[in-house]
Image (cartoon, rainbow, N blue to C red; front, side, top):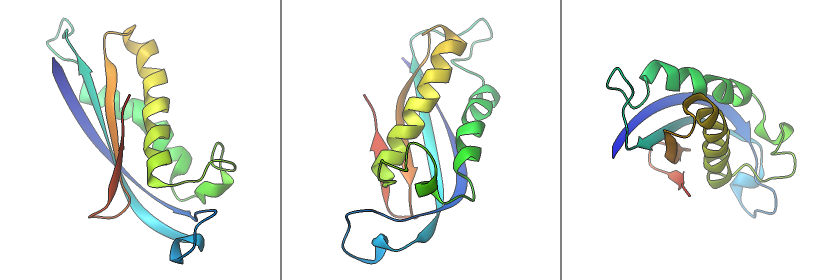
Length: 125
C-alpha cells in the first residue's frame, strides 16, 4: 500500500454547545489539518495522487471554514464544531471528491485536525 499526506491551515472561530467551561464562549484557533490518502496502485506517472491535486481538492473545504465562525456554517449550525467533528467533516468532504476524481483507486485513510500545537483529533473509517 502507498500513502501520501498533505497539510493545510486555516483560522476560524467557534464555541462548543452543551459544554461547561471556557470553550462554551466564542474563541478562535489556528487549525492544521492533515489528510492521508491510501491506495494499492500508482497511476501511470508513478504517483498515488499528485500532491498538487490533493491540495486543490482540499482547498474549497478549507476556504469554506477559513476566517469564519464555524457555528454559523452548515453542518455546524446543528453539529457541535468540536475537533472530532471537524476531522470527520474534512474526511467526508475530501472522500466524496476524491472518489469522483480517482474512480475509487485512492481513498482517504484518515484526517488529523490540530486545534492547538499539542492537541488534535483524528477520524478514520
